[in-house]
Length: 628
Image (cartoon, rainbow, N blue to C red; front, side):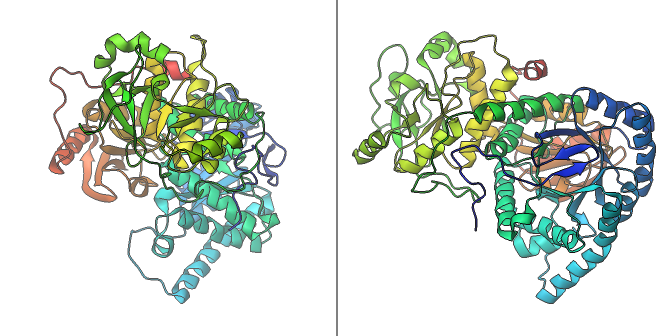
């Protein structure tokens, strides 16, 4: 299979054809476009117009509106007309699930239609069926018959189409042939694209969305590799997004890991950050992701290592390092007979050891200067404690371009923890990929978010957060990294919290309750923001439990594949509760649903009582901090 990018250690944006969405060009030489989605009922014309105008005013370049029924789709005519009468020419995209008839109606009025191959004229009943080749071909023929009219209408009107696969809503046919995999996501989209191409329709944009950054990254890379394999004229633009990212700092971190990592690979022509917040808050995050990518792309280019990459870009596997000991500031896990590293005064305590590498969890480091600022309160820092001091860890700092130093280290008898040296004009991701490719895998690697130590206590937090999450999160999803150090954030407490939250969002180290929460839209059957807040208040102490909060069933069961429990809108005022992908409680009145969710968690042995003193660990950063 062809590579997913020309050079994984030097930024080069993927070359794609231009697709026009109204007056907005996507792909080609255009900048990366930022888009969002309104959250109100599509039948509320004035509210839809007002929210679309509000988004356009804060820099949203493309607005998406759900059209779950033919009636909703027909009302897009009035929304679009109202926007144009008010002098707003922002392109409108109709979001379609399940109903080809709604897509046909919507395509009369909008500049772009988004369809999901997993549930557009396809079945998703989670049935186990062994399809013969003849049965599979018959299913494709049926889909071609249902999909062709929409393609012809889009061609006739000159509008664009996004073929948007979601990890949580693959059809039974795809699931049974390819499984719940990135390959299944890609093949699902390509089946629909081939139908469009047979009709000489090429105004296509692809997306491969998931709430799991590792799955999302692998799926997009695989998509690009498959498009290259298909031929030069398959150079369609790509839309990036993480589904169900949630809210607050965690959602911004998860979005940066998924979207930011792919942007650094040169993949992505338009992006949407999905937050369980008012849509206008998505735009600054998306713009900051684009800006941090542009800043990193100016770094010194590196040459692809002759040894190739140290990781498989399409399948996660952690790099195999030896287990070593470093002097720690706590005692998270060496056996009593392990010897501690000696450490100088002023930082680590040589009486404590920290194990890293091998199968150990990824550890969190702190600079000595910052440790001295918080040493008096480490025992009160709960889940956000530093585990070792960088200067006391016998870390070896290298320039990954220095082959002689790398070779010398590779010849040493003992495994050493290695980091990229500060002060180099290199992209963090590129530098660490090059280091991992040249370094023998036995040596553990410490990841840094920045090769510059922050000296500005007034620096804006959002760009710092996004840069740290992109740099460290991307490498963790590549399987690289045995310890992390956030040094681009000046405040030591905030840097430590950011370190742990990046590990959690990347699925590397789960230390608190994990939430998967979708953004609101016109399909949502309850207030997602207030409901998410209620569920968090009731369950935030359940460390390691994953809870999905879904406004409707479009992606619910599938995106909850990795969740322990799910809270899903089933009907207006009614909630269905899930264990994994299986619905077990139906039509629960919304007023009772959070209590019933707690009961369900108890039934499955995952409930623990909250601390008697109410001292549950919570995020210290407010939404205002991350929105600055």
